[in-house]
Length: 178
Image (spheres, rainbow, N blue to C red):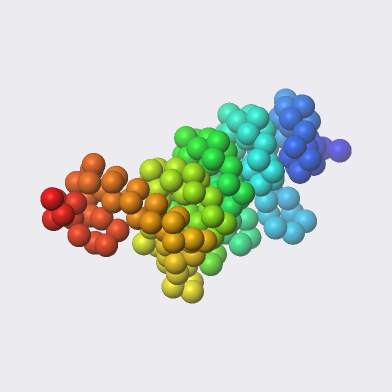
């Protein structure tokens, strides 16, 4: 088994020791699984919530914004599963909070649709845009699982806009409201 194969197999199973060994043996942290989805080791461990494995791969220079054949990145996978720590780690390593899939969905769409309030809050604080619409014309606010989460997102976005003197999600400047 090559180092690249070991890396992907270890990532699929969340085997930290196998990932470390594969990288030490020269595995490319960007290698894609050519079998079907073009996913990387980082995507597998992000989907599995393996923060320790994610940290090792990011330190080995795995690209957090690499997208599979459907345009889904590791951040989408971490956010969809409600992994706040994994989402934060990816953002701290340069993952774009508003990266879109082939269908126009952002990590915020994914987290909002699953009802993951803390992950949504983190994404908004990191700059995720509440106004981005997917191919069906739906914003993250439109796919929220509850009115409570929708209200939380609007409040968080307005609070951040006021702090920065920017426009609120409704398009009015923060100073307009004062």
